[in-house]
Length: 411
Image 1 (cartoon, rainbow, N blue to C red):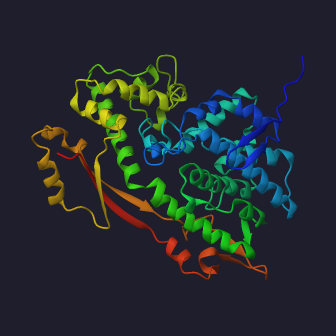
Image 2 (tube, rainbow, N blue to C red):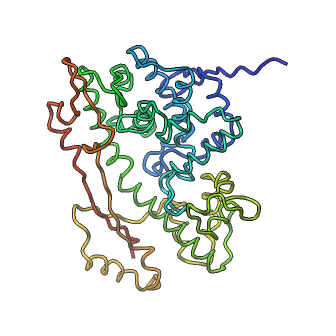
Image 3 (cartoon, helix red, strand yellow):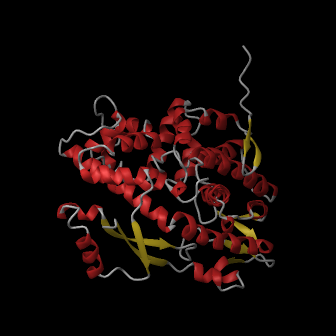
């Protein structure tokens, strides 16, 4: 029997042909936990605004791995010493950095596990994959969680200028059609240079970094925090909250067994590995994807409970709530006025499902981060991009912007 060819070529719509250069990368991609990411959309419900935003966590992870391959090539050509094991570890870490995401990615991140981030679940899933692959990705896990001695590898996976951000900005820009988010990935990567624990950018690459930061800010306001995206994602959260309340009250509610488990149980970090009906919460979570939520909402639109049926019908038919965004928190009188308009159609105890407030937060760059973006000057000194840039916009991008919103169903 001939040996399986693991050095495949993937045709990616953003970068063209991507070569898998490492057999362990192929083995990871074949694992069920990685294949699951084909069924989880990268941008949650952003497709309600940008119909092309149907790409998945699988595509993003493959793209980020391609960029990592290129970055390692550049850094090695400029003096970074890497063993084959270290190179493999970096590729493993970036390939699996998002494997812990659940249905609709960030939208429902904290619904299934209380105060447990997707990074924590990613590492838990990495441990499972490592076990199944005979311990071959232990070093990759160390790169991911920052315990590997070569810190520069971790910073290529998670920092203010990592392969994750480079890919999602380019990829999300491509699939949404928001051209303001497009960045010069190739040039940024070619300008990388090793500098201690963090990669720096050669001085002539400074304008590409300025564009990267501006693009990131614009993508947040135009895509990730677009007002209609905020509305539909908040409505989905309300649906899931009501589903859990009904499940806890003993009300019959359709749900696939994996979703029913999370509706009936509140899972905290200390219960991740606790056996329940011969399975752990991680086992149940591994079986969840976007389709479980969609299939449930399609049934919930007919439920006798008016809260969950109304919200479900509105999401399925894109009959969304209105939203008002302001630099100031909405006045209490405005909230009461909106609730008053619904008092004849919505019982008072359920008004918070149909009138609610929240905050939007956008900060493109952090001056106080442990992983600043450094520019390498001709004299060999390093300068933070906010200091090195000759445009005031970069310093401005380091300032947090907070906006407030109120969402409501029209009476």
